[in-house]
Length: 356
Image (cartoon, rainbow, N blue to C red; front, side):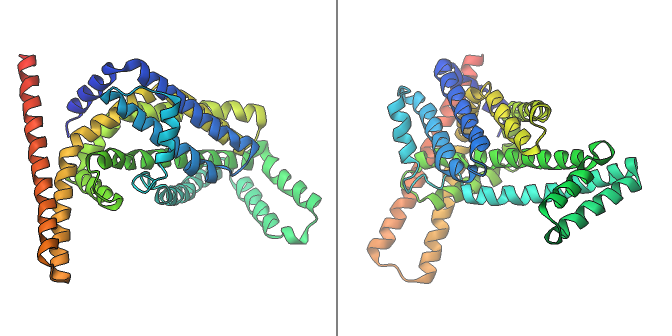
């Protein structure tokens, strides 16, 4: 996959409907920011809101943007209609939300351990035994919480956290906020890559969701590192704005609330608001990336169909009608891939003629 080709295709898609791209992008970013803001009112509500509101609306906005290419208009009615379609069998696992959550938790856990070790060595080098004494005292207080009254426990914890210029409190802020940010970035990246299966589903309407995802994964592997390099080259501003908003927002929140949890939430809200300035281009970039990935997706689906046919034949003997149906399905895939190649070759020749 060539990054230059992906960029040119993305630019072409954007120029076809720039205003609607901005409307959808800003609306989605503000909607996500509003959902994240519910964390101030209902702590832990993300577990419910992300899979049942955020991702269905992300799907709806992606489909709305995709439909602009076939002259469909953006409307509130279509938005809610597509919101409902997300929960139907073909699309409800498009983002692999549970797997993405699990991977995010693993990454966050490993990062938390790593950042704590790094900060432990830094703080020990700077404060010396004062740091280790306060840290061990804090841990002992937490372990002996059952033997202490609530007031004595809170006084002891607060004393250790604020001792020596809020040494341990600063440590806790850095660990909590940075690990939350890494979790948000990781989850956004995983969901973003998984969303390519939505476009694949549209080009392979008769295939199961598992078959579609397998075809996309195999196609990405065929591209090797070029897919991810193109993805990063096109979408790095999205993650830059997300990080910038989270850092600035968390610093402001720390000055106002002096609380790491509120700082994380406020930082994520600011991050998503800033992404609204790039989301219009992000939609085009994802369509562009899939358009370049699509020939490999269809080729991979053909390979998987052959493998499934061979596997079925090994497991049991097919009757004449079943064998014919499988062969017809594979022939249809072969024709579709050949047609796609011919279209791509024709487009390349036309582009070369325009350049000359």
